Image (cartoon, rainbow, N blue to C red; front, side, top):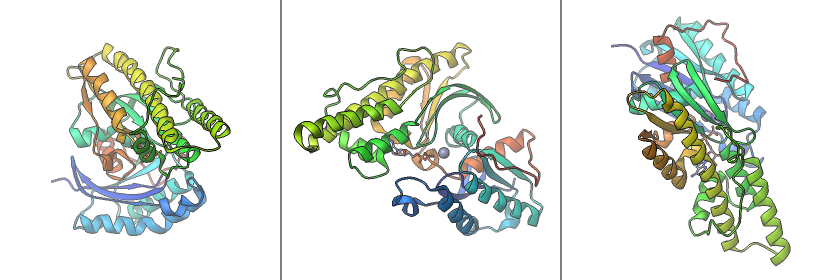
Length: 341
Ligand code: KG4
Ligand code: ZN
């Protein structure tokens, strides 16, 4: 049987390593840096890069240990070589090169976004082509995934990613980070209709989106309430969160409906729409997307959260798919801060 692929991921604030064989995840270790950045209200690139450089060796060792093997059992090394914070990407690429040079194993550089986009094949065995919505703190785009290195981008955010907007709204309202889960929790007893928030770009054709205006609308509404009543009540927070979340949901659902229609024009036998990224954890959003898929007669697929958010199993799996179609990288593999699909 083929030997498993070692995956390495370090493009943002998670140091991760995994071993994958076929669709089987033998080990997946993710060490987050949340605490290191907490005091700064966001990821500090220099701190992230140092932490990756210090942590990756141990993370790789832990993954090998969990899979009950050493490097001699590995068949190839796959590493995120972009896009992302360049210091972190470099730390991962150097780790992979060290292993490849020391063992003679083949190596493959993987686009982080391709890793996310191919995950539904790992978790659910989806066949090409399928529609993918990537929604996280850093990404937001619709892709038709046609092959391991063949993507058609239908649209994406022209400013903030939705997760970033959730995080900023939480900050504006004094709720804990990461903002997505706290805003979703606060929304539970909120009235989404109390404040009239915009639905940016819905009046324009296509699949592009915008979320930064929504966050500003929440800020203005908060300031107006504070000026009027001297502070924010719990119910105000709940209503602001619910209104904001409803607006994000409406925008993503309508754009998903359009993307699905474009994708289904050259419809495959069994159409499918998948979501990935941290924001895909949002209950009301997930339900709305599921409805959109059902209305179009498409299968809906949302991988488990641990494989939806940043991890190295998706990188190992994408590397495996790329190598199966003949791709290899040399020891001159470059780290790329920007790398659109
Ligand atoms: O995919 P991810 O773990 O990391 C990257 O951005 O690459 O996504 C993290 C983002 C954060 O912005 C977080 O606030 C958001 O996902 N998020 C959510 C929820 N859980 C996490 N957003 C909305 N609702 C949630 N339940
Ligand atoms: Zn990611």
